[in-house]
Length: 183
Image 1 (cartoon, rainbow, N blue to C red):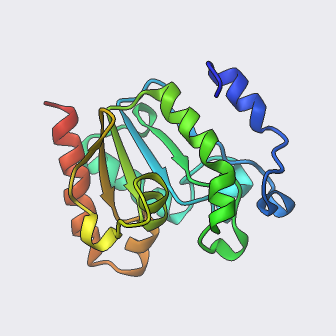
Image 2: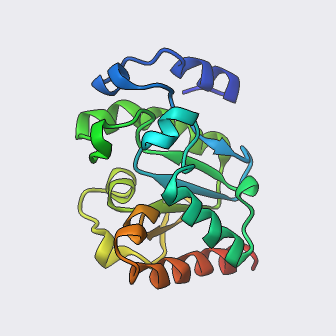
């Protein structure tokens, strides 16, 4: 584990821990306030993220930004990362070995940010952070506390693009986050 951002970010520059490195344009490390109270964790970069080197800049990211605006969260005030730092081919779900290869980077990001709340965006984030026994359909919208951090599992913004009915639940989940942080 690294004690500072500079060392952590330097450690990933030429990462070849899994096969995802073969086709990446950029490593998508994370972005935002490195002292944020709220951290968002998604699945992995898509094409736009791989191209720009920043998480959640494509269609799903634009939708997430709109939700942030709607509830009064500034994107610049939160920290955003993913389970894997390189784009899986055709935006498929990261394989277990790929997620495992990146998890220490993510754990170190959590240690350095020290968030009070982590929003887990989708099943991949939920299962890799809290455990394989969790399912997003049954867990979303319910607070889970672990080691002094409050977790809020919710839909991944990409799921909202496929199923508009999930937008209301996503909104309610983010509203819970906003209410808890402003207590």
